[in-house]
Image 1 (cartoon, rainbow, N blue to C red):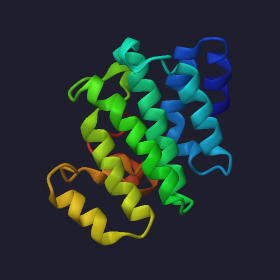
Image 2 (image 1 turned 45 degrees about the vertical axis):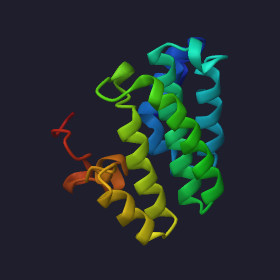
Image 3 (image 1 turned 30 degrees about the vertical axis):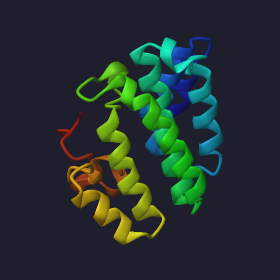
Length: 162
């Protein structure tokens, strides 16, 4: 199914980015995930952040978040932090409460990803501190993806079949 979505999107950078965002949690299990996610992110990235549409910024930022979580899972905290900082710049421009291309991307999503990255890197104190600061909002489970989400492998807040 994943390969079909990517093949169908070939030639359309928006569709390719949409497919990659939705497949991000699955792609993170692959050794090549970070390079695939970054290639898709920078393909949709606007040349200048100020000229990017909210949709482009959401797609690029969502892919950068997925790449950051891949880096964190691999133990590369420096890369994870840099990618989350880059995604954070885009998130500020997009704002919270939007759902361009079903990315759920915005400042809160980046902050939740920082909590998840800290967990992946084994820094429980940082994860708890970020969560308790209120920025993580207690929804870190949803950003962790299906393997760490709600019972049955669903993401928190997503109904069965959703």
